[in-house]
Length: 341
Image (cartoon, rainbow, N blue to C red; front, side, top):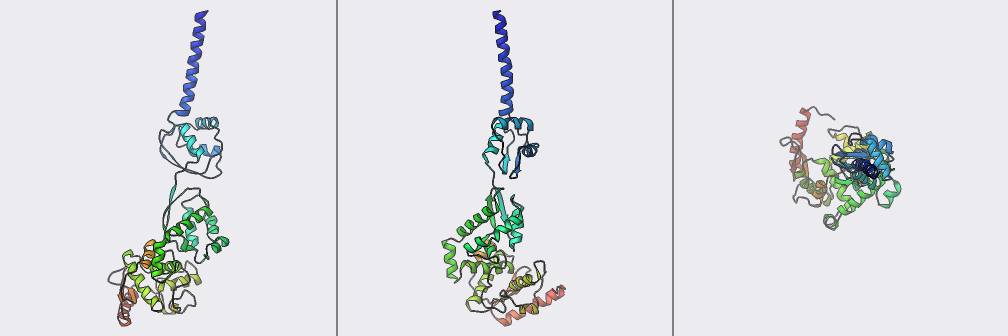
């Protein structure tokens, strides 16, 4: 009888050991079969989460069992990095804590708020319409001394870190904080030295941006426009004419060549007719263009024309007669290219 009790007790221990080991394996054994990122949309259900995890873990039913034991019932949206050999215990802990992996958000050359919203929507969960509504929120713009026309200046092109499920308003507000940090005491002092406000710096930088894609040439172009500005000459910047034409005809209006008749367009952005800087920026300037205006090249040039000998660059001139020779050469070249508009 005594031996029978011993055998029964031993058998129970073995069974309990097997059950315990099975449970231990479910909870703590390696379960993630490959490394990778998973994007969990906001308001995802546990059933939907299981489907998202199906390609990453051995058994979604085991995951569901562990989640229930750990009282994990409501997924938190975001981007999460899974590592091969993670246990279900570690996986649930990561997802339950909301310990997201940030995404790198970058943008440049987004010349309208609409294009910017579209670009950001490709990188974050929020959609472009929600972003655009946030960008154009009249109460926010008024409080921050922006208008719809000037609001693009707040978004400094760069690479930033955000959580994937960052809301439109939080994205916008964080970009405002980056904008304020960008305009530090040093940059503000340089702007003052040029006799410009930060809004004027960005307005001029947007012209420089559109005038030349060559970063090395931007300080020289900025210096030329500052020479004209400080001497109260019209800037006569073709990019502002193109901007005015697009305002009139729509963003899809293609302008490869500015015509003499275009210079007569009635617009506050016509820098052939109006002395001084345009009311707002005309494009999203890179940091290199902003820095070019803050640190312009010092020279005596007042004129420039696209170069036909060094494509992509410009020919600079100190006198109108010299400029006219350069312009004639360029006009002959562009006519030969068959570019009429």
